[in-house]
Length: 271
Image (cartoon, rainbow, N blue to C red):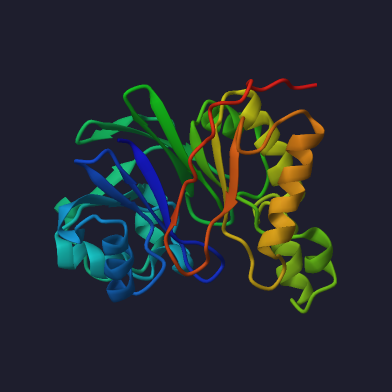
């Protein structure tokens, strides 16, 4: 068993969980410590059995409960040097701070981890890929644009939580102030539905079987719009949803499990 869950996802808070049945790793904790414990329990995993918490970057929708969870459960906190220096999570003992470097592999309890750089307006942000028994799971959100290096890092993932933050027209004509719109649309902002769809197609070509769209804006997106954008891109290129790949959207405030793939189909035939 090698699984990934989205615990919560969106502009209001983000947290995910990776487990191989014995080792359990929390990625980000953008909610209260109490709520995080409730969400973890809903996966059937005891919070006390967590091995570590990994942080992608310092923004509060990813770090709100990191310090509380780390102190309460005695967990090491893994993050880049820039993220460690920038995030405000309260007192953490020096020996509980573990520094990761994008492109440098590490291991926690037999699960291989590869941090990779992401283009986002944070100190030193990163995504994470996880490897166990020849299976690769990836979390790739808070991405301003898709670079060749980023695509190389996430290609070959069996399952991925992929950002699909906003519909460009909803954002442009919405209520956000102009500077915030420009930040989101910038190369260090967030990924649009259209760009997520293009990335999803490339991922399916490399063998990805499960795509979960995440980090949706609550003001500038809707789950059905994000899903339809990717659905159309994939099906227009010969991909059969639920046969070649599962496609779903992470719930904003509750646990989302990856759907099972119907493997009875004929396989992918891209054109």
